[in-house]
Image (cartoon, rainbow, N blue to C red):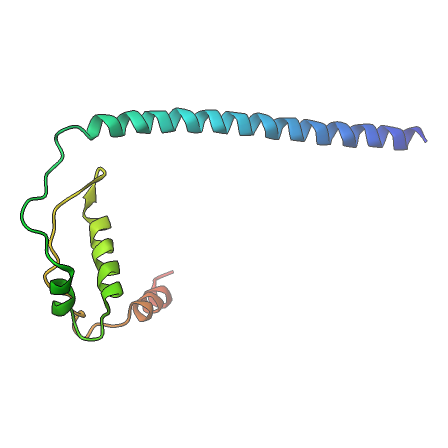
Length: 125
């Protein structure tokens, strides 16, 4: 019977040690996260001074962009494309000024998924 008691003592001790280690890891990760978030906040507060570029000129009405877009594109698609461009044009948290003049499909190019499959299957070993 002493072997069973010894087994349970070792098992319970192991489980307790593992959970204590997990709690310590959680505390360490949360402290490191707070440190990095405070550093990021300081970095953003320093970079968002008066050196931000100002967007000048009159805003382009949404109808103008939608009317110049290719047939079959809804206003929602145009808005999504414009938002994607704005994300790409963002540098250091500041969006560079831009204007969407027209939206057209790329020429007779392949479908993106077709190209991904082609590249995946023809990649050298």
